[in-house]
Each structure stands twice: as structure tokens, then as C-alpha cells.
Amino acid sequence: MSTMGKYCKAYHLKALRAFSGWSEKAENARRETETEDGKEVEVVRELTDDAIVYVQENYVVTDGIFKDENILFDDVTPEWIAYCQEELAFEIPEYARNELDPVEAKGEQTG
Image (cartoon, rainbow, N blue to C red):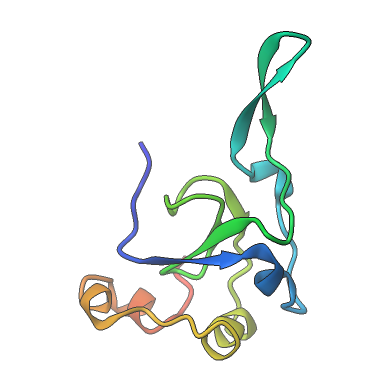
């Protein structure tokens, strides 16, 4: 079953790709239904710079709002956290921070 986190924020993928340590797992992108030769088939969606993705409260990036599905980036390092906070202005709001465990609330990687 999918897990909904306490907080996530949407970004255009272009902003995340600007991080020097970025590497994405494009094969984990959401599936979309397309019609080919009159048949509906599921394909992995193309991740363009304009694609909307989500930074979760644990700094993992997903292609959807659930924090444990369609994970595109999970190399959470102090540099990534600093990039999110300084360049993307990612900050977990107080209401959500109070509900996180102490490690996640500080922006440290959980393991």
C-alpha cells in the first residue's frame, strides 16, 4: 500500500537537474496509458524538464505524491539537503515538522 508522507513540494524537474550530484532513475517514472495500433498500452512517461516531481519530507524525489512510489532520486546527502534548502527554498512547515520523527524533521537522512 502506498504511503502518504506528511509533506512534499512540487518542482519542475529542471530545477532539480541543476544539482551537480543529480542522477535520476527514469525507469521509475509513473506509467501512462497510450494508444498504439488501436490498443491501450502502459508506457513509462517521458521526464522532460517541465515535468512536475515532488521532493518529499525525507528529501527523496518522487514522480507522484506518495513517498514510497516512483522514486526518481534517493541519494540523500548533506549536499543535496543544502541544495534543496538554499536553492529550492524547500522547508518543511512547522505543522508537518511536529509530526515527523526527530531525524526527518532536522533534514537528516533516515536509514
